[in-house]
Amino acid sequence: MTGRIFKHVVLTVAVLLLAGGLSHAEQMYVKGITRITMRSEPGVRHSILAMLESGTRLEMLLEKSDWSKVRLSDGREGWVLTRFVTEEKPEILLVQDLKEKNKRLSDRVERLKSENARYQETNAKLNEIETKYKELKEKSENFLSLEKKHEQMKADFQKQKERNKKLEERLDGQVLHGLTGGAAVLFIGILLGLGSRKKRKSSLL
Image (cartoon, rainbow, N blue to C red; front, side, top):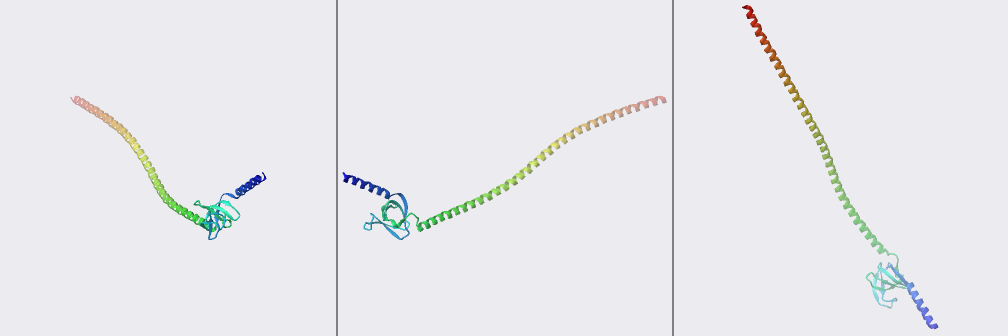
């Protein structure tokens, strides 16, 4: 009975230790040295699976005091010496990141330059269109003003024409009346002259 309890306790402790050694797939890196070995099992007696360069990204699966089980980006798993891995990004990766960041910034600057050039071109075209629009607007305003004056002049001319027509009609009426009156006076004068002649002749007789 005691032996069974002891085995149960040992098994429980082993499980707890194993669970304590597991990590949550933590991102790790090979430290800044030339190369390290990844082996099939913890210990230098086991076969080498790969040689890992400084800066290689590792996924921590199980961490112990001397050896840690890791997974590479291609899915291969193995054991490496714990002292050769770190959570801090190696300088070589930091330099690469800076180079990539600098390249992205340079590309962005070039895109901004290109966009700015297109903006300047578009702005110049807009300014040209705005200038032409203002000129057209001024010409249109002048045209409308001239057209209005022309219509006013036409209306004034028509009114003057109507006034002249009425004046001519009045003048024609006055002349006709004058001529008619003058002819009547002349006719009466002639009649009177003839009458006076007859009287003179009769007096002479």
